Image 1 (cartoon, rainbow, N blue to C red):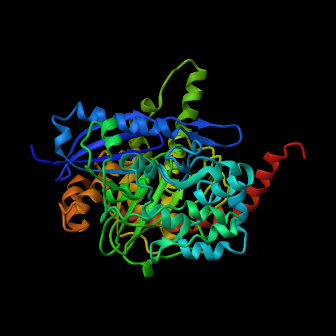
Image 2 (image 1 turned 135 degrees about the vertical axis):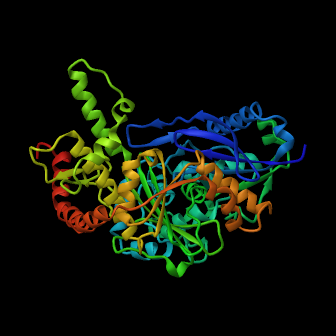
Image 3 (image 1 turned 60 degrees about the vertical axis):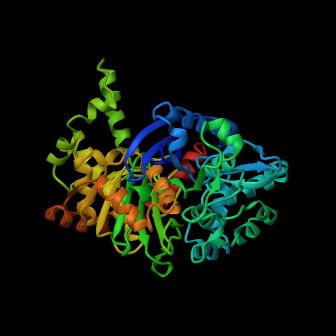
Length: 521
């Protein structure tokens, strides 16, 4: 049987998956293993690197149980995974320490100090990306100060997908997306690691691995990896871009003219626009967000991320569950979601303003403020649970507009993915807040699909990404949700109020943060 399958590995924070696709983009089978990590008292969040590789290898073995003759049918394997963090490899190819995840907050003070330093403006101009505790640059600086022995025994510094690529091929590498927004220059996709000098850890430059462009280059599956996975040695392996870029690619962000936006409405919210060329990147005065290489020559993805998206909905649902439980009634979130769309859409619009900063970590997009907190503005005694939920939904749509406005023109079409994309109310409110039609992404594994699309182009199954996207992405988009004219007008009125309120609240947030930190002062 001839080779006809591309495997996409997506090593996420919660689940590690291997997904089989046909060359035409049809999803054939999925094998998944739950991921796990350890949270430390000092703010550390670590993951066992050896176990991560074993789990990834096991998903490939499990996939073979679902597809006949998989070993002989694989065209290529592509790998993506969770972004940021620090995965250090020593001289022998072993972990130099447990991996630090993007959730790790140990370097928060270093990141915050750097954003106020004289070198921050130049770093932001080079990378197009803000600095925060999740990034490898400040994490390496933390090691220099607190665990220099780990830094000394590391030979190369990687991210999750890079570690898996190393275990699959024996090659130490990084992709252009993570290399550039952490250490590089988005204009030429090359390293420009001056930030390591400014953070006082110039010796860490030796750890930066070669940058590999996955749409052009592959390495063969090693003998050791073939034994561990059950797949054929020499099978081409492609290093994908970071998961959020692959999800955007698989979810429909690719557009030659840069008209399309893509939002992920999950626990956190990610909002992305495509810049067809470097001179069309729009940096913001707050110096926030990310600019990442996109796997099409010359193109870049700009991103702004809300710390909390559907977590705001979960919070309000759990509040209702707590009230019911106090009266002996047990309900789960799924129970309360039943009919919620209709309840929300029946309530009047624009009566109540909500800022969705429910995360205890504050906000990072389109402004950076660890003290930011969620709030309702305009409550009165006539309002009930459905009014509050309506305001939360509208707040998520306003937050999306806030993020897109920081990156330039609002998108003319929007792709919406993530769990909340199934909500007809949220689709309508996003469409109206941005005055752009919304199509939900119905492909279940957009991240793995994006990585596999890179492999399909690298293997010359398609001559370019445009042809691949036309076959893989367009048929997987749901029907359009059009903006509602009255809601468009409401959002146009509310958006300046939304921004003015969050700007005015920043001194209050800081005062409350100080009060929380010094309760008896």
